Amino acid sequence: MKIDIGESLIYSWLRHNQNCNITQTNWKTSPQWNYEDTDIDRCQKYMTKVSEEFGNSVFGNTVNINQLIKQCEIDVLGIDTFNSEIFAVDIAYHRDGLNYTDTINTVTKKIFRSIFALLLYFKDVKKLNVYFVSPIVGNSTTNKMNELESKISVFMKQLGLDINIEFFMNDKFKIEILFPTMKISESVADMSELFLRSHQLIELFDKEVKNNTNTKKIQNNEINEFVPIGIFAKGLFEKLLTNNILSENDIKELTSKEYSIEKFKMNFPILKKFTNTENISVAININGHNRYYAAPINGFLLCNHWYENHRNPLNLWLLEKGFNLP
Image (cartoon, rainbow, N blue to C red):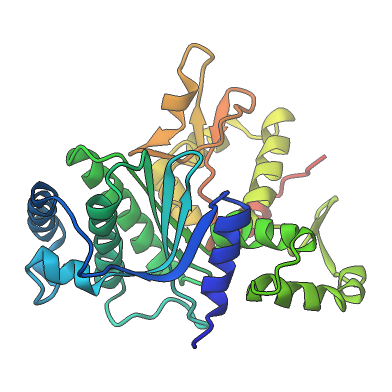
């Protein structure tokens, strides 16, 4: 039997971090399962609309919903029966970065195939989550994937479907999946969970590495080179804003989407003006996703969409500005 370390990681993450009391890897549908004819007809209509919106090449030669459902294999499926919530997760671990022949079409097909299977066989579940996970994604592909995530989420709302679509890549993968799962490894003794057992073994020899971790200095601040970019950026801009280091021109630049794209390769303005009269949940949301931290900093919201490919542009920007951080 094939054992995939990526699937094992997601299996443990769903069990222990997402509270799924039923979890299965390599979940497939069965031709013996029953479903309502009205549901299969509805999914067939959705499939047609997907082809119209995302292109006929998404499903290739497959035009029938029954055939598409038969092809469905979800890497890890988790069910939180207490909250009536289900998670369908596909993970692609390519050491040199996500490298499907046609990445966008492949991921689009995976996402919608999972959606249709959930709608058909789990229609009474209150909340559906469909995730795509990849630890390493190159800069150009990351931008395309971010656009795809937003496009699918908007499309779901247009269909009147309340389904949470999320991509976990690069830093988001590390911060929200890898690190939390590693953290709980000490409290889990289940030897069947390959990823956790592997991490426990590595930790036996990890103390020397941790004690000799190198650090970098950025002016007066010692920054651990392994600090996730999101945490680094949040701490940095908190200092810049709370200490009034940014000039009016700096603020003008950082609240400009064009400047953010050009300087940081960020698809959203780094900063967004905010007043206490605004609804915070509305202010942080863009196209159905929370793209800003919910804690205002001196009248501004900070973008939370940081990935590893933003680290160098951010460091270059700091050098150009020559800020003397307190």
